[in-house]
Image (cartoon, rainbow, N blue to C red; front, side, top):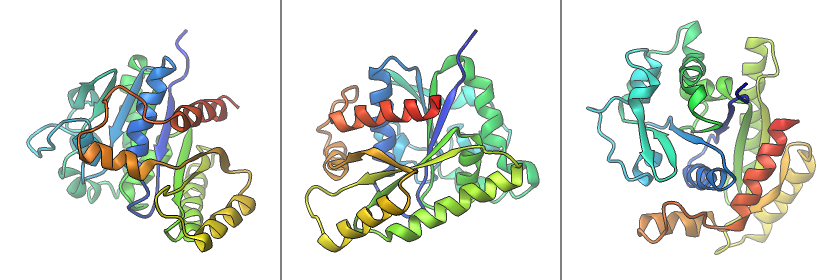
Length: 252
């Protein structure tokens, strides 16, 4: 009997948190601990698709057409190193506007059921907002992970994501997903005031904050932009530790 497919969505109401970099790095980390991994690019900006070395093109079948039920998930998959990416395109922006009907929020969940025998774990990269695309990811997920960065509006971010998750839970009358918080530090430029705020958030939401902290996402992101990082090599031990902690959370 095949083990249950684990699904993680990476969610933030703000850009600049290192969300897409974290998705890609976690993908590599999960592969390193023998997981069959699918990364889903649900952001119309298609940054994850680009990092994977695929030029986003609205002429390609992508997650937009999957959510509109115009194609199957299989037709969006691209093998990248040791894992697979479901590609995005700018068509996702228009597709989101067509998902307002009641069943529009369960389209990703349906699509992932189609490919579940092929993978052990799925990580969804969401757009930097809490709209219909992100709601699809939350509905489909066992665990929603939000990265909080010390130089952004930390508490508003946590509150907003909590509200989005609770709204989905109430709509479906179920504990659909756990919400966990990972602290992300800019190792190049600490601000003492913001470090104090993030420590206060850690105390206030102690049951949701993960033990692992990530301190080098900005450097990793720059490495990708400059073509300096290996596609199949995990960049830091912290990412591997985070992947193990997430697996443990999903087993509870």
